[in-house]
Image 1: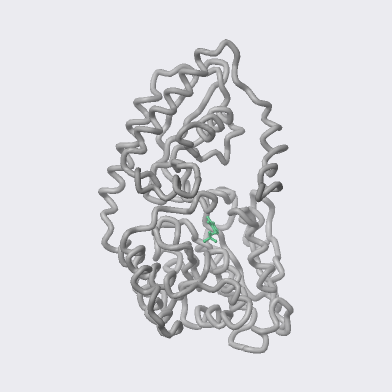
Image 2: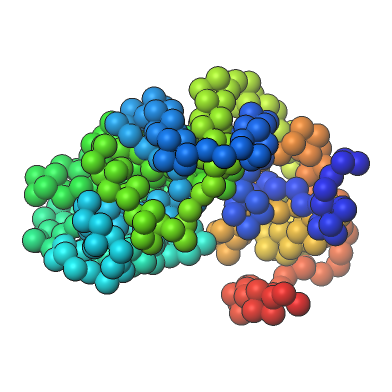
Length: 398
Ligand SMILES: *Cc1c(COP(=O)(O)O)cnc(C)c1O
């Protein structure tokens, strides 16, 4: 693309088949949001009134009584927790993260304490919350939660993500039932979920989404839920929320992205994604040591991905060396490799510009042909991945 800004500023023209990643710039922002942001940037507005307008849109799409826009889903977690700790006590809001009120314990299932790029529990601690872990990594039972709730309990946080342990834990409906029986509000982190209504419908008091993931909005977070809880979270803008603030462009950009979501051709997009997956399946079929499976999203989003399983003795390369070759090639292709030690990675079609699927297919072909032609198996020791994971970052900006 000749108008590709990346070449002008000396950035690599990466192709994103990894999904919605902060480290790659999240998602393709929809044109409606781009236009909305450009139109409001030169104007002054009364921010709280603009947030009122956002509240109405968020309310319509989520079924919540109210909502507002913040910097990220991560800040949404902190603000929602802070709201449960302080209520509308303005002095307490100024004093956070030191606690004046007595309630600051926040219940989380151990199997939900994951990293989305930073630890879930840190977003809670930032708000003055004291994380109370219940259960074990792969099991939580009712008795764990029932016994953890006491007078100090301010909230319970539930995380919906492909990262969390997906068996043996309390389901949201039961989590809500136990919390509500003791008057504890439930906050759901649904950052990457397509369903804007489900979690509030299941009884959550507050739900948090990322504006910049599937919605294709600007970098932002959406807080939705009961009027009281949303208001208490919103009041944190006078406190810890200040460092998490969004400007007019993000608020208005999210409103436009939400409205575009309502009218988006979801079926058409799904069809296009399926055609990409079919192309890759064709490209990979019959190749020695390569198995390509089309799999549904683990949290039931209407999205399929391709799992590419590599058997090094036949393919002559490991899954992680193939991922690295694609990443360092031209153009750089970033695959979804969270679980690469199991000898597979995923190809996620949801953030491709039309035409890029062919480049991905060709690059896969090239690298696999090259590996097959080599006499040795290309196999960097797996330990090197973790040993060197932060080398580049620790030397930043060099
Ligand atoms: C991405 C993600 C977050 C963080 O969202 P941001 O809007 O980038 O802060 C939080 N929780 C989960 C489950 C996520 O997937």
